[in-house]
Length: 193
Image (cartoon, rainbow, N blue to C red):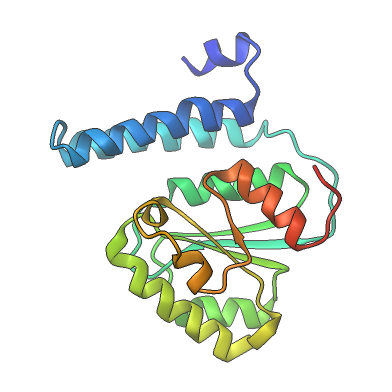
């Protein structure tokens, strides 16, 4: 299937958004409607992760734009596929990208931001019950680094919690990875992509 998509002329970004992301949204909907089990949801996600890992070495990468982005899920967030895809999109766009994965404590994230401050920090939340962890993490980061923090947020939790990104003071919010890149360019005063 992956090879068929590439052979048909689909770009890797198109495969990410139009195939993998679309499939994951459909799997999530089926799970929420109780039409598939959590086992099936995990299997589908594992397949998507395998496809992304396979594609990673062939990502089309632009020349470095001299900007660093840090992408992470908040403490308790175990759904990291979307965050991984966003990190890959930023890497393709020429950002120096660090991807920290799922379930990262606020303390660990604060230490990383202090150690090597990014131009943009993106935090991902898929499950609504992790929004309080996002709020707490954001508060701890702002206490630690103040106005030097340019925050981006994303994930499925924001679909049912409109206004949350604005309330957190997030400068970047995109409904998908491509939109997040456009917003990052705007906020960081970079040339349009």
